[in-house]
Length: 254
Image (cartoon, rainbow, N blue to C red; front, side):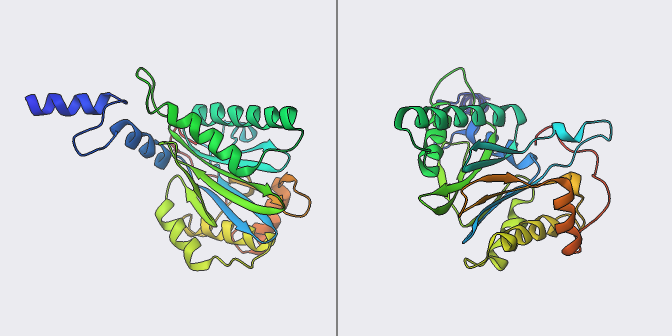
């Protein structure tokens, strides 16, 4: 009984390490990320591609209210997986930091700088009693000094830079697909194709335009652009991935 009580103390206290050096609440936050539908980022020579699975739980829900891709600045986009409310808080924080940088220095914020600002903010919530970690992972992609950059934020507050990655549900399978098919020489269209085929690999190769979100940040124009449903449908039809409607019964996370 005494050992069980000690285990619960490590389990409940965000600021307490277990004897084997673990922070259980951070690990639980990572589990919350796994419950969210998948998001994918791909870095190409022509820019960055963000793609998300945004299936909804009910046909009565307005599809436009499901947001998993966000514009942080003209040259930076963010995709999320995990708790919706946590994602909104971090994205609002990222937008504020981007605007502060423009006002203070008169130039757009760097992708790496913004990512580290966000992860520093996340990390503070792993050290303060009475708070919990953010149960969300973000994919932050954009253009910095003409070069595409792609980062992941972890609930522990650690930033990672990637060439291509997935977060959320089915991460292992999607990541394996990306590793097998990624090429550093691909262009933006190639990145979109790779991201959609990766999503299709865990959805029986059937996707709907309403259930998928795609955004690009072009390296030449350095502009964030989110594709419309019609444009997404064209890509899906061309790749023979066009399926029926969205599945129901999705978890509360995004």
